[in-house]
Length: 514
Image 1 (spheres, rainbow, N blue to C red):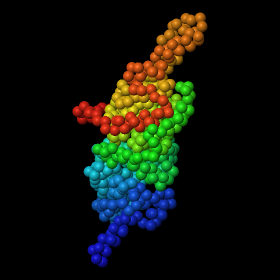
Image 2: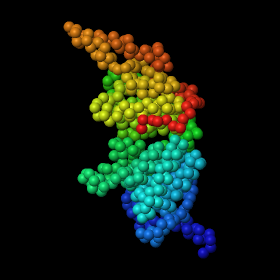
Image 3: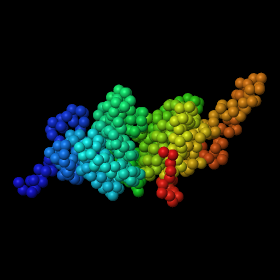
Image 4: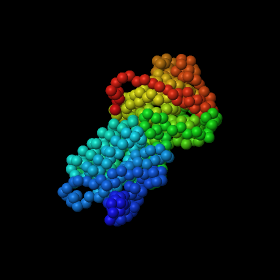
Protein backbone atom coordinates (compact mmCIF):
# COMPACT_ATOMS: atom_id res chain seq x y z
CA UNK A 1 0.00 0.00 0.00
CA UNK A 2 1.47 3.40 -0.98
CA UNK A 3 1.63 6.31 1.44
CA UNK A 4 -1.32 7.96 -0.31
CA UNK A 5 -3.39 4.81 -0.12
CA UNK A 6 -2.59 4.42 3.56
CA UNK A 7 -3.53 8.04 4.19
CA UNK A 8 -6.81 7.63 2.32
CA UNK A 9 -7.63 4.53 4.36
CA UNK A 10 -6.83 6.30 7.62
CA UNK A 11 -8.94 9.31 6.66
CA UNK A 12 -11.83 7.05 5.68
CA UNK A 13 -11.67 5.27 9.03
CA UNK A 14 -11.30 8.56 10.87
CA UNK A 15 -14.38 10.03 9.20
CA UNK A 16 -16.28 7.08 10.57
CA UNK A 17 -14.84 8.04 13.95
CA UNK A 18 -14.44 4.46 15.07
CA UNK A 19 -18.17 4.03 15.20
CA UNK A 20 -19.32 0.65 13.97
CA UNK A 21 -22.25 0.22 11.58
CA UNK A 22 -24.17 -1.24 14.51
CA UNK A 23 -23.46 1.88 16.58
CA UNK A 24 -24.67 4.05 13.71
CA UNK A 25 -27.87 2.02 13.51
CA UNK A 26 -28.42 2.46 17.24
CA UNK A 27 -27.91 6.21 16.88
CA UNK A 28 -30.47 6.39 14.09
CA UNK A 29 -32.86 4.15 16.03
CA UNK A 30 -32.86 6.78 18.79
CA UNK A 31 -33.98 9.33 16.23
CA UNK A 32 -30.53 10.94 16.23
CA UNK A 33 -28.14 11.86 13.44
CA UNK A 34 -24.43 11.08 13.63
CA UNK A 35 -21.87 13.82 14.25
CA UNK A 36 -20.91 14.19 10.58
CA UNK A 37 -24.57 14.10 9.49
CA UNK A 38 -25.35 16.93 11.89
CA UNK A 39 -22.46 19.01 10.63
CA UNK A 40 -23.62 18.44 7.05
CA UNK A 41 -27.07 19.80 7.94
CA UNK A 42 -25.64 22.80 9.77
CA UNK A 43 -23.01 23.99 7.31
CA UNK A 44 -23.17 25.03 3.68
CA UNK A 45 -22.81 22.01 1.40
CA UNK A 46 -19.20 20.94 0.86
CA UNK A 47 -17.73 23.65 3.11
CA UNK A 48 -16.62 21.57 6.10
CA UNK A 49 -12.88 21.36 6.76
CA UNK A 50 -12.13 18.84 9.51
CA UNK A 51 -9.01 19.03 11.66
CA UNK A 52 -7.28 16.55 13.97
CA UNK A 53 -9.05 13.64 12.35
CA UNK A 54 -6.24 11.27 13.37
CA UNK A 55 -6.00 12.29 17.03
CA UNK A 56 -6.11 9.34 19.47
CA UNK A 57 -6.07 9.06 23.24
CA UNK A 58 -2.98 7.92 25.11
CA UNK A 59 -4.74 6.51 28.18
CA UNK A 60 -4.04 3.02 29.47
CA UNK A 61 -5.89 0.75 31.84
CA UNK A 62 -9.53 -0.25 32.16
CA UNK A 63 -9.42 -1.60 28.60
CA UNK A 64 -8.76 1.76 26.92
CA UNK A 65 -5.45 0.68 25.41
CA UNK A 66 -7.32 -1.87 23.33
CA UNK A 67 -9.61 0.74 21.82
CA UNK A 68 -7.99 3.83 20.36
CA UNK A 69 -10.24 5.12 17.57
CA UNK A 70 -9.10 8.06 15.47
CA UNK A 71 -10.91 11.26 16.39
CA UNK A 72 -11.53 10.12 20.00
CA UNK A 73 -15.27 10.69 19.87
CA UNK A 74 -15.43 14.31 18.72
CA UNK A 75 -15.42 15.91 15.26
CA UNK A 76 -13.85 19.36 14.98
CA UNK A 77 -13.41 21.83 12.16
CA UNK A 78 -14.90 24.79 10.34
CA UNK A 79 -17.10 25.61 7.40
CA UNK A 80 -19.53 28.29 6.32
CA UNK A 81 -23.14 29.22 7.05
CA UNK A 82 -24.65 31.49 4.39
CA UNK A 83 -21.10 31.98 3.17
CA UNK A 84 -19.71 33.19 6.53
CA UNK A 85 -17.06 31.28 8.50
CA UNK A 86 -18.25 29.20 11.48
CA UNK A 87 -16.31 26.82 13.75
CA UNK A 88 -18.03 23.68 14.99
CA UNK A 89 -17.43 20.63 17.12
CA UNK A 90 -19.74 17.65 17.48
CA UNK A 91 -19.63 14.84 20.01
CA UNK A 92 -19.84 11.38 18.43
CA UNK A 93 -22.01 9.34 20.78
CA UNK A 94 -21.09 6.16 18.92
CA UNK A 95 -17.53 6.36 20.33
CA UNK A 96 -17.17 6.04 24.11
CA UNK A 97 -20.68 7.48 24.38
CA UNK A 98 -19.29 10.84 23.30
CA UNK A 99 -17.52 11.08 26.67
CA UNK A 100 -14.72 13.58 27.13
CA UNK A 101 -11.16 12.44 27.73
CA UNK A 102 -7.79 14.20 27.50
CA UNK A 103 -7.41 13.95 23.71
CA UNK A 104 -11.09 14.70 23.12
CA UNK A 105 -10.78 17.86 25.24
CA UNK A 106 -7.53 18.92 23.55
CA UNK A 107 -9.29 18.89 20.18
CA UNK A 108 -12.06 21.12 21.51
CA UNK A 109 -9.59 23.48 23.20
CA UNK A 110 -7.68 23.91 19.95
CA UNK A 111 -10.86 24.61 17.99
CA UNK A 112 -12.08 27.17 20.53
CA UNK A 113 -8.73 28.95 20.36
CA UNK A 114 -8.85 28.96 16.56
CA UNK A 115 -12.38 30.40 16.60
CA UNK A 116 -11.24 33.22 18.88
CA UNK A 117 -8.16 33.88 16.73
CA UNK A 118 -10.20 33.91 13.52
CA UNK A 119 -12.97 36.00 15.08
CA UNK A 120 -15.74 33.62 14.04
CA UNK A 121 -18.75 32.04 15.81
CA UNK A 122 -18.44 28.70 17.59
CA UNK A 123 -21.21 26.10 17.53
CA UNK A 124 -21.09 23.01 19.75
CA UNK A 125 -23.27 20.00 18.91
CA UNK A 126 -23.59 18.28 22.28
CA UNK A 127 -24.31 14.56 22.57
CA UNK A 128 -22.01 13.10 25.22
CA UNK A 129 -22.01 11.12 28.42
CA UNK A 130 -19.82 13.55 30.35
CA UNK A 131 -16.30 12.99 31.65
CA UNK A 132 -14.65 9.71 30.62
CA UNK A 133 -14.49 7.84 33.93
CA UNK A 134 -11.55 5.67 32.84
CA UNK A 135 -9.32 8.75 32.44
CA UNK A 136 -10.00 10.18 35.89
CA UNK A 137 -8.96 13.70 36.75
CA UNK A 138 -7.47 14.45 33.32
CA UNK A 139 -11.00 14.31 31.93
CA UNK A 140 -12.19 16.77 34.56
CA UNK A 141 -9.29 19.08 33.74
CA UNK A 142 -10.41 18.95 30.12
CA UNK A 143 -13.75 20.46 31.11
CA UNK A 144 -11.97 23.20 33.02
CA UNK A 145 -10.14 24.13 29.83
CA UNK A 146 -13.46 24.38 27.99
CA UNK A 147 -15.05 26.51 30.70
CA UNK A 148 -12.24 29.05 30.81
CA UNK A 149 -12.34 29.40 27.02
CA UNK A 150 -16.13 29.81 27.10
CA UNK A 151 -15.62 32.62 29.57
CA UNK A 152 -12.77 34.33 27.74
CA UNK A 153 -14.66 34.16 24.46
CA UNK A 154 -17.87 35.46 26.04
CA UNK A 155 -18.90 38.68 24.35
CA UNK A 156 -16.05 38.29 21.86
CA UNK A 157 -17.44 35.69 19.44
CA UNK A 158 -20.97 34.26 19.38
CA UNK A 159 -21.10 30.87 21.12
CA UNK A 160 -24.09 28.61 20.41
CA UNK A 161 -24.77 25.29 22.13
CA UNK A 162 -27.05 22.71 20.51
CA UNK A 163 -28.26 19.95 22.84
CA UNK A 164 -28.81 16.74 20.87
CA UNK A 165 -28.28 14.11 23.54
CA UNK A 166 -27.43 13.71 27.23
CA UNK A 167 -25.44 16.38 29.03
CA UNK A 168 -24.86 15.59 32.70
CA UNK A 169 -22.75 16.81 35.57
CA UNK A 170 -20.10 19.45 34.97
CA UNK A 171 -20.57 19.09 31.21
CA UNK A 172 -23.81 21.08 31.53
CA UNK A 173 -21.91 24.19 32.54
CA UNK A 174 -20.31 24.78 29.16
CA UNK A 175 -23.67 25.32 27.41
CA UNK A 176 -24.76 27.49 30.34
CA UNK A 177 -21.76 29.74 29.71
CA UNK A 178 -22.60 30.26 26.03
CA UNK A 179 -24.86 32.87 24.43
CA UNK A 180 -27.74 30.69 23.22
CA UNK A 181 -28.81 27.12 23.99
CA UNK A 182 -30.91 25.09 21.53
CA UNK A 183 -32.47 21.80 22.66
CA UNK A 184 -34.42 19.00 20.95
CA UNK A 185 -37.29 17.22 22.68
CA UNK A 186 -37.07 13.52 23.38
CA UNK A 187 -33.37 13.07 22.74
CA UNK A 188 -31.66 15.71 24.89
CA UNK A 189 -31.45 16.17 28.65
CA UNK A 190 -29.38 18.43 30.87
CA UNK A 191 -28.88 18.05 34.61
CA UNK A 192 -26.15 18.31 37.22
CA UNK A 193 -27.23 15.19 39.14
CA UNK A 194 -29.17 12.46 37.34
CA UNK A 195 -32.36 10.67 38.41
CA UNK A 196 -30.46 7.90 40.24
CA UNK A 197 -28.58 10.38 42.43
CA UNK A 198 -31.71 12.43 43.05
CA UNK A 199 -33.56 9.27 44.09
CA UNK A 200 -30.77 8.17 46.40
CA UNK A 201 -30.32 11.53 48.10
CA UNK A 202 -33.84 12.99 48.22
CA UNK A 203 -36.09 10.00 47.64
CA UNK A 204 -37.71 11.76 44.67
CA UNK A 205 -38.53 9.46 41.76
CA UNK A 206 -38.16 11.35 38.49
CA UNK A 207 -37.45 10.48 34.86
CA UNK A 208 -34.62 12.01 32.84
CA UNK A 209 -37.01 14.14 30.78
CA UNK A 210 -38.97 15.30 33.83
CA UNK A 211 -35.72 16.24 35.55
CA UNK A 212 -33.87 17.90 32.70
CA UNK A 213 -35.70 17.48 29.41
CA UNK A 214 -36.23 20.10 26.73
CA UNK A 215 -39.51 21.49 28.02
CA UNK A 216 -38.16 21.77 31.56
CA UNK A 217 -35.31 23.98 30.41
CA UNK A 218 -37.45 25.92 27.93
CA UNK A 219 -40.21 26.80 30.43
CA UNK A 220 -39.04 26.29 34.02
CA UNK A 221 -35.27 26.74 34.37
CA UNK A 222 -34.68 29.18 31.52
CA UNK A 223 -31.52 27.35 30.45
CA UNK A 224 -32.69 26.73 26.87
CA UNK A 225 -33.50 29.67 24.61
CA UNK A 226 -35.03 27.55 21.82
CA UNK A 227 -36.75 24.13 21.78
CA UNK A 228 -37.57 21.87 18.82
CA UNK A 229 -39.16 18.55 17.95
CA UNK A 230 -36.43 17.37 15.56
CA UNK A 231 -32.78 17.98 14.75
CA UNK A 232 -33.30 19.30 11.22
CA UNK A 233 -35.59 22.18 12.24
CA UNK A 234 -33.30 22.93 15.18
CA UNK A 235 -30.19 23.17 13.01
CA UNK A 236 -32.09 25.24 10.43
CA UNK A 237 -32.79 27.82 13.15
CA UNK A 238 -29.16 27.73 14.28
CA UNK A 239 -28.30 28.76 10.72
CA UNK A 240 -30.93 31.51 10.85
CA UNK A 241 -29.69 32.87 14.17
CA UNK A 242 -26.12 32.95 12.86
CA UNK A 243 -27.37 35.11 9.97
CA UNK A 244 -28.55 37.67 12.54
CA UNK A 245 -25.29 37.81 14.50
CA UNK A 246 -21.95 39.42 13.67
CA UNK A 247 -18.90 37.19 13.41
CA UNK A 248 -17.38 38.88 16.45
CA UNK A 249 -17.70 41.90 18.72
CA UNK A 250 -15.66 44.11 16.40
CA UNK A 251 -18.26 43.86 13.64
CA UNK A 252 -21.89 44.82 13.28
CA UNK A 253 -24.54 42.28 12.24
CA UNK A 254 -25.00 41.96 8.48
CA UNK A 255 -27.58 44.37 7.12
CA UNK A 256 -30.02 43.04 4.53
CA UNK A 257 -31.93 45.30 2.20
CA UNK A 258 -35.63 44.60 2.66
CA UNK A 259 -38.44 45.00 0.17
CA UNK A 260 -40.57 46.11 3.12
CA UNK A 261 -40.54 49.96 2.95
CA UNK A 262 -39.12 51.56 6.13
CA UNK A 263 -41.93 54.14 6.10
CA UNK A 264 -44.70 51.56 5.69
CA UNK A 265 -47.77 52.75 7.65
CA UNK A 266 -48.66 50.57 10.64
CA UNK A 267 -52.40 51.21 10.73
CA UNK A 268 -53.14 47.89 12.47
CA UNK A 269 -51.50 49.21 15.61
CA UNK A 270 -54.57 51.40 16.16
CA UNK A 271 -56.64 48.27 16.81
CA UNK A 272 -54.07 45.81 18.19
CA UNK A 273 -53.52 47.75 21.42
CA UNK A 274 -56.76 48.44 23.33
CA UNK A 275 -57.33 51.92 24.75
CA UNK A 276 -58.22 50.51 28.18
CA UNK A 277 -54.86 50.13 30.01
CA UNK A 278 -56.22 47.11 31.90
CA UNK A 279 -57.18 45.14 28.80
CA UNK A 280 -54.63 42.53 27.67
CA UNK A 281 -53.26 41.96 24.17
CA UNK A 282 -50.38 40.06 22.59
CA UNK A 283 -47.36 42.31 22.19
CA UNK A 284 -45.99 39.92 19.57
CA UNK A 285 -48.66 41.28 17.22
CA UNK A 286 -47.17 44.74 17.71
CA UNK A 287 -43.67 43.45 16.97
CA UNK A 288 -44.86 41.68 13.82
CA UNK A 289 -46.47 44.88 12.57
CA UNK A 290 -43.31 46.92 13.10
CA UNK A 291 -40.44 44.71 11.88
CA UNK A 292 -39.42 43.84 8.33
CA UNK A 293 -41.87 41.43 6.70
CA UNK A 294 -43.37 40.61 10.11
CA UNK A 295 -40.53 38.16 10.85
CA UNK A 296 -38.80 37.87 14.21
CA UNK A 297 -37.01 35.20 16.22
CA UNK A 298 -38.27 35.05 19.79
CA UNK A 299 -35.75 34.06 22.46
CA UNK A 300 -36.93 32.09 25.53
CA UNK A 301 -40.49 32.08 24.20
CA UNK A 302 -41.69 29.62 26.84
CA UNK A 303 -39.96 31.10 29.89
CA UNK A 304 -40.91 34.31 31.72
CA UNK A 305 -43.68 34.98 29.23
CA UNK A 306 -44.54 38.37 30.74
CA UNK A 307 -41.69 39.86 28.72
CA UNK A 308 -40.90 39.16 25.06
CA UNK A 309 -37.32 39.23 23.76
CA UNK A 310 -36.78 38.87 20.04
CA UNK A 311 -34.30 39.43 17.24
CA UNK A 312 -35.61 40.93 14.01
CA UNK A 313 -34.67 43.27 11.22
CA UNK A 314 -35.95 46.82 11.09
CA UNK A 315 -35.14 48.67 7.88
CA UNK A 316 -32.57 45.94 7.30
CA UNK A 317 -30.82 46.49 10.64
CA UNK A 318 -30.70 43.53 13.02
CA UNK A 319 -32.48 44.77 16.13
CA UNK A 320 -33.08 43.38 19.60
CA UNK A 321 -36.61 43.97 20.86
CA UNK A 322 -37.62 43.89 24.52
CA UNK A 323 -41.38 44.19 25.03
CA UNK A 324 -43.65 43.90 28.04
CA UNK A 325 -46.39 41.33 27.46
CA UNK A 326 -49.78 42.47 28.86
CA UNK A 327 -51.20 39.05 27.96
CA UNK A 328 -49.14 37.41 30.74
CA UNK A 329 -49.17 38.62 34.35
CA UNK A 330 -50.49 41.92 32.97
CA UNK A 331 -47.00 42.64 31.66
CA UNK A 332 -45.51 43.13 35.11
CA UNK A 333 -41.81 42.55 35.66
CA UNK A 334 -40.94 39.71 38.03
CA UNK A 335 -37.76 37.84 38.94
CA UNK A 336 -37.66 35.61 35.87
CA UNK A 337 -38.66 38.35 33.41
CA UNK A 338 -35.98 40.64 34.78
CA UNK A 339 -33.30 37.97 34.37
CA UNK A 340 -34.49 37.04 30.89
CA UNK A 341 -34.52 40.62 29.62
CA UNK A 342 -31.21 41.49 31.33
CA UNK A 343 -29.43 38.58 29.68
CA UNK A 344 -30.89 39.52 26.30
CA UNK A 345 -29.88 43.18 26.63
CA UNK A 346 -26.33 42.13 27.58
CA UNK A 347 -26.12 39.83 24.57
CA UNK A 348 -27.32 42.54 22.19
CA UNK A 349 -24.87 45.02 23.65
CA UNK A 350 -21.97 42.57 23.38
CA UNK A 351 -22.60 42.01 19.67
CA UNK A 352 -23.47 45.55 18.56
CA UNK A 353 -27.19 44.95 18.12
CA UNK A 354 -29.36 48.06 18.74
CA UNK A 355 -32.20 47.69 21.21
CA UNK A 356 -35.82 48.83 20.87
CA UNK A 357 -37.89 48.63 24.07
CA UNK A 358 -41.68 48.49 23.72
CA UNK A 359 -43.08 49.57 27.08
CA UNK A 360 -46.48 48.76 28.55
CA UNK A 361 -45.73 47.97 32.18
CA UNK A 362 -47.86 48.48 35.32
CA UNK A 363 -44.93 47.84 37.67
CA UNK A 364 -43.12 44.99 39.35
CA UNK A 365 -45.12 41.93 40.37
CA UNK A 366 -46.07 42.31 44.05
CA UNK A 367 -45.97 39.47 46.56
CA UNK A 368 -44.09 37.95 49.45
CA UNK A 369 -42.58 35.29 47.17
CA UNK A 370 -41.16 37.94 44.86
CA UNK A 371 -39.72 40.04 47.66
CA UNK A 372 -38.21 37.08 49.50
CA UNK A 373 -36.96 35.64 46.22
CA UNK A 374 -34.91 38.78 45.62
CA UNK A 375 -36.89 40.92 43.17
CA UNK A 376 -34.76 43.88 44.24
CA UNK A 377 -31.55 42.08 43.29
CA UNK A 378 -32.95 40.46 40.15
CA UNK A 379 -34.71 43.62 38.97
CA UNK A 380 -31.40 45.42 39.40
CA UNK A 381 -29.89 43.03 36.83
CA UNK A 382 -32.12 44.48 34.12
CA UNK A 383 -31.43 48.02 35.29
CA UNK A 384 -27.69 47.34 35.25
CA UNK A 385 -27.84 45.78 31.79
CA UNK A 386 -29.60 48.78 30.27
CA UNK A 387 -27.42 51.33 32.07
CA UNK A 388 -24.29 49.51 30.92
CA UNK A 389 -25.36 49.10 27.27
CA UNK A 390 -23.61 51.31 24.71
CA UNK A 391 -25.49 50.24 21.57
CA UNK A 392 -28.24 52.45 20.10
CA UNK A 393 -31.25 52.32 22.42
CA UNK A 394 -34.77 53.48 21.54
CA UNK A 395 -37.73 53.40 23.91
CA UNK A 396 -41.36 53.43 22.76
CA UNK A 397 -44.13 53.71 25.35
CA UNK A 398 -47.20 52.04 23.92
CA UNK A 399 -49.70 52.60 26.68
CA UNK A 400 -48.66 52.78 30.35
CA UNK A 401 -45.38 52.97 32.22
CA UNK A 402 -45.62 53.11 35.99
CA UNK A 403 -43.15 53.40 38.83
CA UNK A 404 -39.73 51.85 38.98
CA UNK A 405 -40.61 49.52 36.13
CA UNK A 406 -40.86 52.54 33.82
CA UNK A 407 -37.34 53.60 34.78
CA UNK A 408 -35.96 50.07 34.39
CA UNK A 409 -37.47 49.63 30.91
CA UNK A 410 -34.80 51.86 29.34
CA UNK A 411 -36.16 55.29 30.15
CA UNK A 412 -34.33 58.44 29.09
CA UNK A 413 -33.05 58.81 32.65
CA UNK A 414 -31.02 55.58 32.39
CA UNK A 415 -29.58 56.32 28.99
CA UNK A 416 -32.04 55.63 26.19
CA UNK A 417 -30.90 57.65 23.19
CA UNK A 418 -34.41 58.40 22.00
CA UNK A 419 -37.79 57.98 23.68
CA UNK A 420 -41.15 58.06 21.94
CA UNK A 421 -44.70 57.56 23.13
CA UNK A 422 -48.13 57.01 21.64
CA UNK A 423 -50.80 59.67 22.33
CA UNK A 424 -52.65 57.61 24.97
CA UNK A 425 -49.53 56.97 27.07
CA UNK A 426 -49.61 57.15 30.85
CA UNK A 427 -46.25 57.72 32.56
CA UNK A 428 -46.42 58.11 36.32
CA UNK A 429 -45.28 56.83 39.68
CA UNK A 430 -48.41 54.68 39.74
CA UNK A 431 -51.87 54.50 38.21
CA UNK A 432 -54.30 57.31 38.93
CA UNK A 433 -56.52 55.10 41.11
CA UNK A 434 -53.67 54.03 43.37
CA UNK A 435 -52.18 57.51 43.54
CA UNK A 436 -55.49 59.14 44.47
CA UNK A 437 -56.09 56.59 47.21
CA UNK A 438 -52.68 57.42 48.73
CA UNK A 439 -52.67 61.20 48.36
CA UNK A 440 -56.31 61.88 49.20
CA UNK A 441 -57.02 58.98 51.59
CA UNK A 442 -58.06 61.14 54.53
CA UNK A 443 -60.21 63.43 52.41
CA UNK A 444 -61.93 60.46 50.77
CA UNK A 445 -62.51 58.66 54.07
CA UNK A 446 -64.05 61.76 55.67
CA UNK A 447 -66.29 62.61 52.73
CA UNK A 448 -70.06 62.09 52.89
CA UNK A 449 -69.90 60.55 49.41
CA UNK A 450 -66.45 58.91 49.33
CA UNK A 451 -66.84 57.20 45.95
CA UNK A 452 -67.78 60.44 44.27
CA UNK A 453 -64.81 62.22 45.84
CA UNK A 454 -62.52 59.34 44.91
CA UNK A 455 -63.63 59.53 41.26
CA UNK A 456 -63.09 63.29 41.27
CA UNK A 457 -59.58 62.96 42.72
CA UNK A 458 -58.63 60.22 40.27
CA UNK A 459 -59.67 62.47 37.41
CA UNK A 460 -57.77 65.39 38.94
CA UNK A 461 -54.55 63.37 39.32
CA UNK A 462 -54.83 61.94 35.80
CA UNK A 463 -55.38 65.34 34.21
CA UNK A 464 -52.53 66.89 36.18
CA UNK A 465 -49.73 64.31 36.13
CA UNK A 466 -50.65 61.44 33.80
CA UNK A 467 -51.82 63.27 30.74
CA UNK A 468 -50.00 62.07 27.60
CA UNK A 469 -47.87 65.19 27.15
CA UNK A 470 -46.60 65.69 30.69
CA UNK A 471 -43.40 63.70 30.12
CA UNK A 472 -42.74 65.24 26.70
CA UNK A 473 -43.14 68.75 28.14
CA UNK A 474 -40.30 67.92 30.53
CA UNK A 475 -38.01 66.36 27.90
CA UNK A 476 -38.37 62.79 29.14
CA UNK A 477 -40.09 61.79 25.90
CA UNK A 478 -38.64 63.10 22.64
CA UNK A 479 -41.88 62.99 20.72
CA UNK A 480 -45.46 61.77 20.93
CA UNK A 481 -46.10 59.96 17.66
CA UNK A 482 -49.01 58.65 15.64
CA UNK A 483 -49.04 54.82 16.07
CA UNK A 484 -49.46 54.53 12.32
CA UNK A 485 -46.00 56.07 11.88
CA UNK A 486 -44.27 53.76 14.37
CA UNK A 487 -42.25 51.76 11.86
CA UNK A 488 -41.10 54.91 10.04
CA UNK A 489 -40.07 56.64 13.28
CA UNK A 490 -38.14 53.63 14.61
CA UNK A 491 -36.44 53.06 11.25
CA UNK A 492 -35.30 56.67 11.14
CA UNK A 493 -34.07 56.50 14.73
CA UNK A 494 -31.93 53.43 14.06
CA UNK A 495 -30.55 55.03 10.92
CA UNK A 496 -29.55 58.15 12.82
CA UNK A 497 -27.93 56.14 15.63
CA UNK A 498 -26.10 53.56 13.51
CA UNK A 499 -22.70 55.20 14.11
CA UNK A 500 -23.21 55.82 17.82
CA UNK A 501 -20.01 55.77 19.85
CA UNK A 502 -19.99 55.65 23.63
CA UNK A 503 -16.96 55.79 25.90
CA UNK A 504 -16.92 53.67 29.04
CA UNK A 505 -14.95 54.50 32.18
CA UNK A 506 -11.61 52.76 32.62
CA UNK A 507 -12.14 49.72 34.81
CA UNK A 508 -11.37 46.04 34.97
CA UNK A 509 -15.09 45.23 34.83
CA UNK A 510 -18.27 46.25 36.56
CA UNK A 511 -19.77 44.40 39.51
CA UNK A 512 -23.31 43.55 38.39
CA UNK A 513 -25.89 42.14 40.83
CA UNK A 514 -25.52 38.54 39.60
